[in-house]
Length: 328
Ligand code: LMR
Image (cartoon, rainbow, N blue to C red; front, top):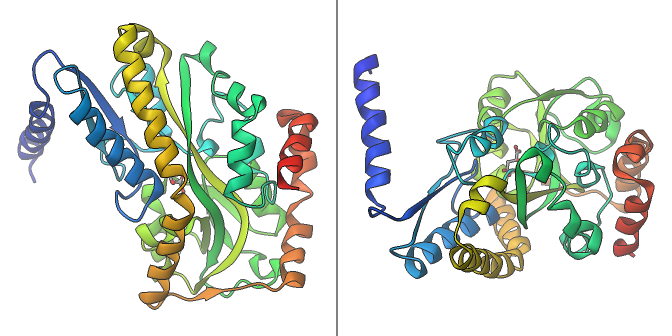
């Protein structure tokens, strides 16, 4: 496309998206980076869009932009603060510029499963985390689940030493950098939308993600296989700007937040099943999935867990203790 044609195409798509909303409606643009189907966040975002547009018709109008079509996660929080979008749900690993509290979610083997993550988030400590960035202009609204992370590479990963010397894509989190270094890997922070190409071209050798992301972005097609490590978690914070929320009339805000909370409850309880179905879809498509026995898994724990000590000061030993208590 010529520059002029691109400009026309862009203004047409922006114009047609806005045209879906009626004059006078509060437009809520929700930008995220994942697929819409077979994905916990994608499904939740679509359900939220549908319910807001049905139940708040005439008052509020939501437009979801999935698959990094509007912003990647490095840009979306700035876009929220500038009012270019009104809602986002980046993974908890992507808030480093705003808070170090969320580092607890990235520490390897901190949570045994998504129920433990849910219980921790529901605690007073977890709930307070939603307010931790108010001074920076961001209000956390609710946590959305994805699931546990698995490890993949262009060679079989069974022992942690198999990761020695491999380049791994990580989300923009220093904890994840330290985790990959702990297994002798060489970590590279990279936007989600670039991972497939980077794996395909050998810019990186491996990555870690949930079944729904590994399936949704077809990472398994350009990897030797995926090892079921369940070593960490990807979860999300649905976030808005304090200014935007404050600017809503109270009844409108209440109705919106009620719908959001109902969607959260419905979809969070399905997140595990959505990942299991993505895992099955990987197998159906011929992807290789490797299991670890208890001894092998313990080797990954032993290799990665020393990372906790490095970040205990950021996340607070009392929070680590609380997270371990919900695992029990
Ligand atoms: C990633 O960057 O791998 C994930 O945070 C993407 C997502 O939103 O699940």
